[in-house]
Length: 250
Ligand code: PEP
Image 1: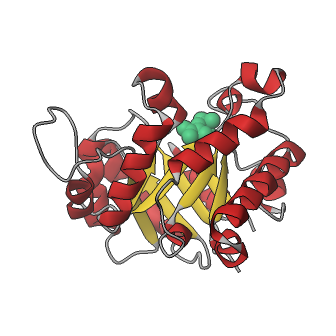
Image 2: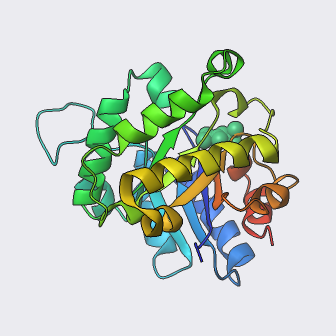
């Protein structure tokens, strides 16, 4: 019922030339894949080239961030309209590295989600608890706050367009994947909050991705969980073969 999404987040890796080489290697590997939304998220300077090389294919493009204003005196920032113009259809928003190193808050995430929707982009809104929060039993209140605040003032009509990515911070780039049971538990909880916020049909339509050390070896068991609708992949998305292996999880 929900089309799975497999999105690769390249973080601050790959020049424009390296990005183009990846796409040329990757496209034939996934050319026959149907029923999965495949997304690449290169750094800003590679957006246009990846956008141009993937145009008309089964691979979409995301930015790794956007500013919440349409334009203005915000040195160093990039607006939703600009990334869309460069070929992006999605925008990753509120990644834990943005929250940790660039002072992003639930409130700024909310402004960016609304700005992305207004520009016609699909927000991939990230949330997740730290190790300390998990170990002190705060996982559910933390992700509930992040979800509710991140989606504040988003209408029930707009909400189905949003993709939520549950990324426990302790599992990102650590090689330590959440177990399928741990991930499913949080995904089901998040879907329950979505139901409270927007009603059951919307809650059933929203894709909730898991992120945190996803690899070709663990994607299938994660995807077999009823509330896991895809993956946001960091490290393993940097190699065309490995990422294609994740895309072909079935
Ligand atoms: C990420 O960057 O969102 C991520 C999940 O990274 P990794 O797959 O490397 O843990």
